[in-house]
Length: 359
Image 1 (tube, rainbow, N blue to C red):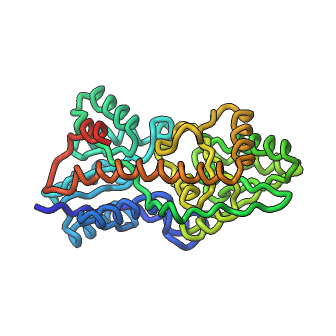
Image 2: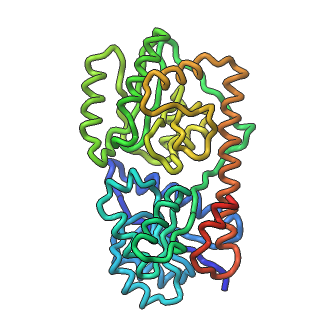
Image 3: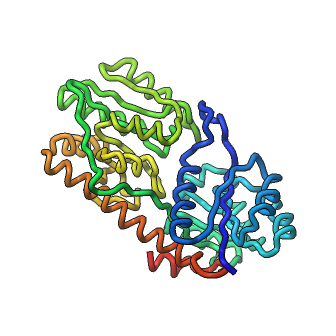
């Protein structure tokens, strides 16, 4: 039987201050669906309002596999769904590492409850696979129910790299994404100010201010109060559709994502696609050490910004090429992981170790 994959997300329309249904999660799913279809694997994604809408979508599409994106379906619901659709392999996909999930009060209990019902838990990062396998074994469950399903990204052609012109007297640093403590906005802001002071320019520090999560409100308050008292500027953007965000990136000189924990980071991938140099932590799995800085050391980050800023034209182009090639390699391996799993007929869970070894 040929595999048909249905990805199901929970609708978040209007939740972050705009009418579009787009989110980082929905974009990441769209990229995977497009990749699967381009490789001859039939896939589709839908958004639903709640648990009770899942049956309708599954009945309509008749998939072999249903992938629930993130932890939002209560475990008991699968008792009903598995009875209604006994031929479907049910999967819940985890997009976070343990430090982030530790702030989600339901994640680990629900993981155990999913596995005990025969629902596969697919993680998008190898360390998350390892951690969740320990959770399974510690609770007397088979760890083969923990599998690997990494992110992909539509990488533009190398010939499309177009370095941006800089504005006179101003440096634009982007630090986008939901405001959360583990995103490390404050230390990055201090690093960006130190860098701007060292080159004698006004800093415009760009953030998303309408999506605040996981006790991020004090972080946003501190950012606003710091910049209100400084000679530099905090530029607050709303959460926006993907195409609009890419347009905003065209005015950014350097993107910072020096986070404490990440599994992929679409914001940095978007910057790569828009020919913006990125400065990140070693948590990002797809980019080389040349872009890494210590997330607890503002001085180290500032030095990284200074190094990027002072690159000559040849060095700047070489960095942008490295970023794009790094992403190409990562996505080729990720795509191969999905193809190995789903390009043939129906296959049950239990291949996480093989998938990660081949990735």
